[in-house]
Image 1 (cartoon, rainbow, N blue to C red):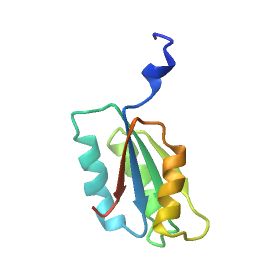
Image 2 (image 1 turned 30 degrees about the vertical axis):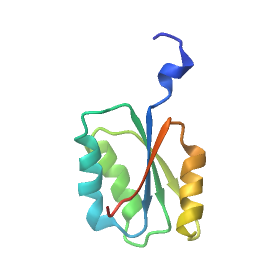
Image 3 (image 1 turned 90 degrees about the horizontal axis):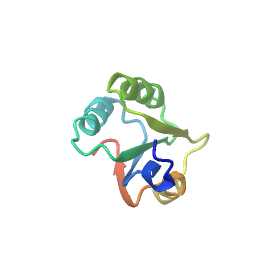
Image 4 (image 1 turned 135 degrees about the vertical axis):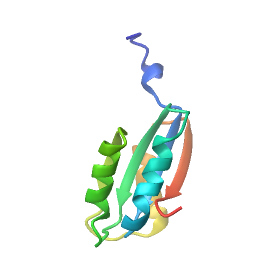
Length: 102
């Protein structure tokens, strides 16, 4: 370990916004796991899904060997507010905002 704080900062922050996207999560998270570039952090925000998306995503991140910061709203928010919350929690130099059904 170098002790260099910059070494722990990911180059890319992948911001995943989810609302009832359970049917797309395996493809989305699997695509992230298949990336050759691994200098990224994943932040996942569930916007009060009713289809079990949050729990499914947790399981899929584990299955694919990925670590993600898991956030969950207790009431729905508009897309800009959700991405602002994700952005505030991110630490990468580059930000990639995505919807989990993309």
